[in-house]
Length: 445
Image 1: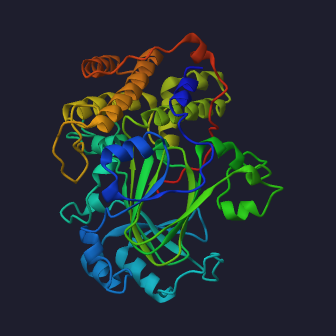
Image 2 (image 1 turned 90 degrees about the vertical axis):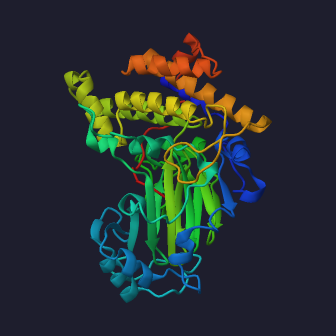
Image 3 (image 1 turned 90 degrees about the horizontal axis):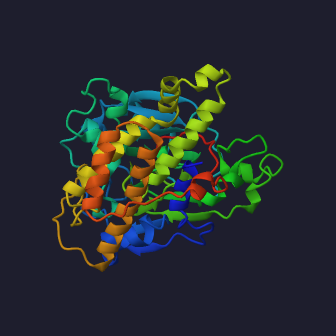
């Protein structure tokens, strides 16, 4: 199967990881970050990236707690998405005023016990996936660190005319994967892998989180006897009869303090707990370094869509299958092809990682200037172009649509110095390295 070739692009991911390294960002250039962590698909905790953020100044009290009165006064009328952590499928909407009123009435600033025992409160509400920057573009709460550029995913949704082209789905073209989270001690996000197998970065404005992460090769060990993934991996660890393979997994845990930024690479399953009252910012992002993960994910999700259709005519109805895929994964395959072609060409034109400089691409709010690449930057650029060229060649070969755009993109990549990667018949037939396909869909964090 041709989709199995994508997996071979990502085999730098470790099957085990003994710890998440902690690095001062002042000692790690953006190019070095991309080489050591992004392209290697390894997590890292970075310090020193948030000191100048307005949110750090405005949203945090002198005691280091969330400044609820300021948030209420400045943003209180905003309607925000809220999840009840006691009932993981219960989604709510309320104004920020209403949420902060609940928070003040039910919780203090007392840190949670490290063992995270269940509380007796009837509801445990967590404000999640708030598209803050979309709602308040004039308020520059933070800037995207240059380490996390280019951000193809958000730049694509931000592009001029998104959603206005005839035949495009507004929902597909107006997405935003920049989120604000806030909640009291004890709130948490269930076990998941991120949307479209994207990377994510998460910065604590204040408070403390605990992360548990599983490398992608251990994904199959997380599934229970019924083939499903656990909601709470800590509870699953106490039920070996339901999750017989879980004890073989080797997760890593890391504590994230105020101002810390964690990089969670593609395909790493993770669960997150707030140990203190916490506010954080989270972005999901794709670029040339991990675009193969997204295509692999969409390809395997399509297998799942078709295997769930009992009627052969339905399985052969590509339009129906693509609609179901979009509903399940957030993007269909033809739109993905258009997204890749647009993003790669834009990246080259803006002298970002696929071009001749190292400036942030569109969609990043931190400004940089193109400059001559050092040896590390040149090696990163070469590897990124190679990976994008591979995926574009696969998309053309699979006939996913947007053939003219993809051919133009491949030509631009070749002109920029990318090697066109040939896929051998032996690789196309290889089926041994496929990653498992079932997962729970959780938006962020």
